[in-house]
Image 1 (cartoon, one colour):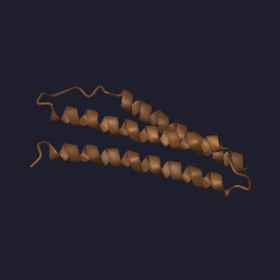
Image 2 (cartoon, helix red, strand yellow):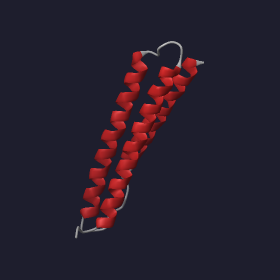
Image 3 (spheres, one colour):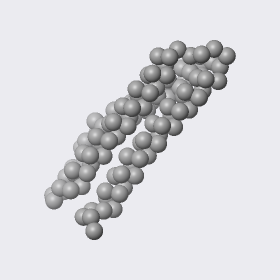
Image 4 (cartoon, rainbow, N blue to C red):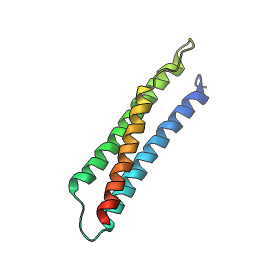
Length: 106
């Protein structure tokens, strides 16, 4: 049995939730952009894909950092907020890009 299996499984589920969020927001944003009468700028789609890729990359790095913390034999203070704040900022920017798509269609 893997030591601290429950914590590792929860960590991986959190990573997969971030990946699902990135895929859903990028897919929904691109779909909204394609609904209008005129095609949106390709740069907005590129920005959505890059932001989604950054969310996946940062969530992977966050997962690896949490794995190392879980495997430590000593207790630790959970002060690593930089990944969480950056992921939150990226998801907010993805929603802002989707809002830009929506307003562009109106």
